[in-house]
Length: 66
Image (cartoon, rainbow, N blue to C red):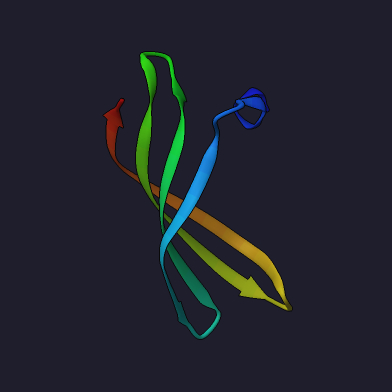
């Protein structure tokens, strides 16, 4: 994916909650958008089975440009 080749792509984990086999990460993503560099708040929800991610879903939040 082209997005993963961005030189300033970075995810910072703000908070992680684990409940049973579900992991919820609140992240702040730094990257270059079509309209400039900035950050995007994201929530990632992972269902883990046998030590591997079985299912992943994402909620995108507020985008802020630098």
